[in-house]
Image (cartoon, rainbow, N blue to C red; front, side, top):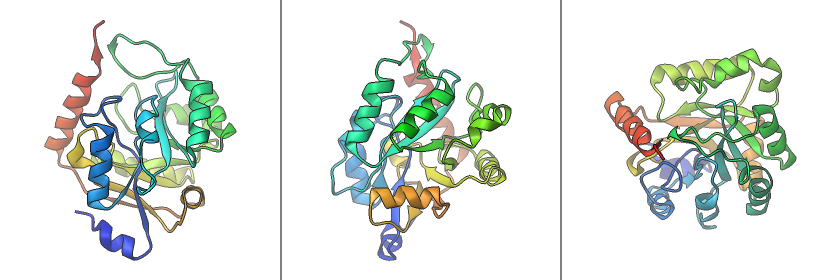
Length: 248
């Protein structure tokens, strides 16, 4: 277990930058996520798919960046982080809420926005733009998309180098890919069930949300992770599969 209390004593701000609740495809409520993070001593970002309700509920006594995982029309997942409730709410109401696609079969949470449009709209609000789990299985595989669209990789702020749902090999490849493209890295558990929240953390020396974001942009973030065994990862994958099948 990551010793969050000791790291915090050293002046390091710890943040799980990727988690889900029942508002998208997680198994826990946002309040359960908040209570768990408080108990364990780490900050939390609720990054529900194309949704911000949970993120907006995080109280002021728990460190967070207001956030969401938004999927482009190209099936590419971007983690977007904002320093204020006002900025994420304005962004969401202007660009996301009316551009969500109603899907049948398996839900990929796509929007009508291209990857370029999504990045540029996020930049309008000075959001931190992070490529989520670049070595996730097809049809995601965002590293492949960006390798074919080299101009776009220069427009993002960083790469999720460690994702708690991904295998050791996938995370290793993501870290190498980030280094190859000279991009900062972040980390998040991608917890869809409560027991994995806080297993993968981003750390920065920062006193505010704005400073935390700037530390990441400057490449000064640190990442910590516990390796989740393959059986538990497959259990989480099965949970996601079942939660996202929509027949009608």
